[in-house]
Amino acid sequence: DLALERIAEAAATGRAVDAITDYGRAIASGESAQAIILITQRYFLKLHRVRGDLDGGRSLDEALRYLRPPLHFKQRDAFAAQVRNWSRVSLDAALVRISEAAKAARLSSQLEDTLGERLILALSAMAAPNRAGSSAARRR
Image 1 (cartoon, rainbow, N blue to C red):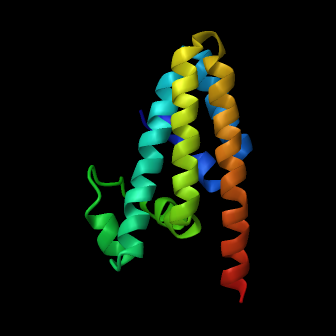
Image 2 (cartoon, rainbow, N blue to C red):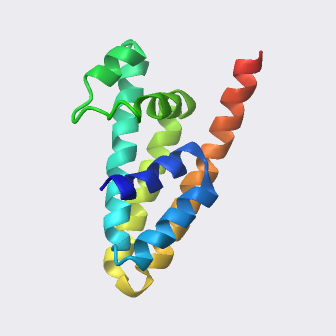
């Protein structure tokens, strides 16, 4: 699961090349695109939950502490940066896109690999403007 979660983590950070490379490796090793989509959905739901807590007034540290299952300590900084970089609206849009891809993959299993790859690219593209905007904000 951690190897597959790295795909979602790379996509959420906007690192399309890393995400697609890991996706290709996972598919080549026999992983199902539907499983990758499901793990990606679970990862983005975690981001959404913590972002919602943050928007609701909790501190980021507190929101991360209440996350279940808890994050591995090595993932914490990267995950926290993603939470800061994604707005709730952007995460809502990402979750809709993931749900649509999951449904399409179930209905068209012969296209699931392509649908999964397109999803990973789309999520990476959605993350890139968020990342650029937060970098500009930090420089100010």
